[in-house]
Image (tube, rainbow, N blue to C red; front, side, top):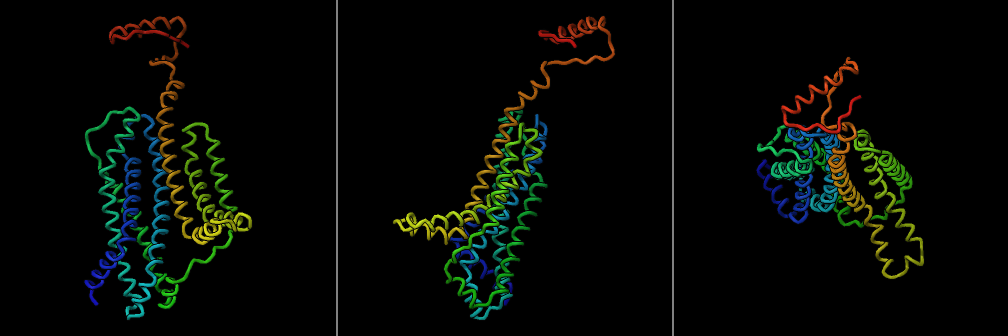
Length: 359
């Protein structure tokens, strides 16, 4: 069988599973857009020139790592859901005579097509919206808006590199799963129901400790400047804690509710709790993704707003005069001469001196 056959088969499979691959591609494009825009802002020369622009870009640089990690977990989780729905299809292909290497080849082409479409589409949308996001930030900080349009190759290259790595990892995982399973297992897995998940006390304990440590670290922050130094640590702890609690803690809570006979056997709690216990294993990661994405957006908005609002206060606290003149190694008798010179300069510039303070 030639490469054209595999290509046609891969495209036909994508079209046939459009209802599932469509939302997956939209989600992939959105993650690419989000990653590119944050990466673009983190290295923007225009943003770096404004007051506290370096601090903002440092926060955004940390955000690039967080979004990249989120994108990897989110796409890996979504892909696992899609592959599970297609296990019966792969099993039938194997029974009808297709070797596992041929199935792997078709799957590789599908992943390549979806990955390239997502990356290219995400970059196009990201480049289009990056200017708008930059203008919003410049407007917040009351900075002069440039007329040019930046398309940094560094952002494009890093975005492509990160998502090619994510899709390559996903493809390797899918191929390993296909080679390890036999056709009957693939057919049985497609028909098999969800097993009741076990209670994971250790994972729940890790989640509680991580989430508590992250919140304590965040509460110890007293100013935006110190927040920059501890931002990454707090975010990582909160992410670990959120995933651990949703995966392990949610099952423990639902099973505890199930043990309450008066609550469990009351209509419609019986059906609701039973369904939630069996589905939380599959949906826990997705719910954690939603929470982490929401938290990341709130952190980015609050960090940017704090820096924007606090700029005037920081300037006033460090420079209590609009103009400061430093003259070293003079006596007290020479101070009036210096003030006279300053007065002459102010008169030439048309500036009125007031609230003069000498030290």
